Image (cartoon, rainbow, N blue to C red; front, side):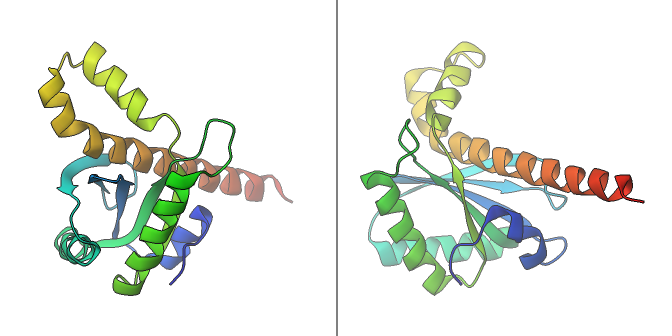
Amino acid sequence: MNAVPLSNLPRLVPPSKRLLGLDVGSRTIGLAISDATWTVATPVRTLARSRLASDLGALAVIVRELEAGGIVVGLPMQMDGREGPRCQSVRQFVRDMVRILDLPVAFWDERLSTAAVERILIGEADLSRKRRKQVVDRSAAAWILQGALDALRHAAAAAVSKSSDEP
């Protein structure tokens, strides 16, 4: 299955299955998981990248363990909205991933997610640099996934509101 628009996930993911959020970097992959109602994203873990086959094998195990029915992947757009080399790398990773994992995958614009998480970890959580490094990728994955969950919830609420306004 190829990547799909985020709005298609609700009809492609079986009921009660959760969404897995990924922050794919060159050295690590941050992971987060939603609850079954797609309300809250929670950081899970960070995978150290190695060979592609190993990375995909580890993700397959995690998908089974966490009972994920779909995946949201952060797309690192440039500040002006264009796609650069990092986007191309993430898109290639997803093309390889969907060959192994037969799950619907949607992209979510992750601009500034890591910077936002870093600010929170420094300002509010007052974490040391070493501890921030340990949690930033999975926290960024949760930030990405939470943004997608909020967008899906907003779109569903707007659809309900629109249908109730019709005679």
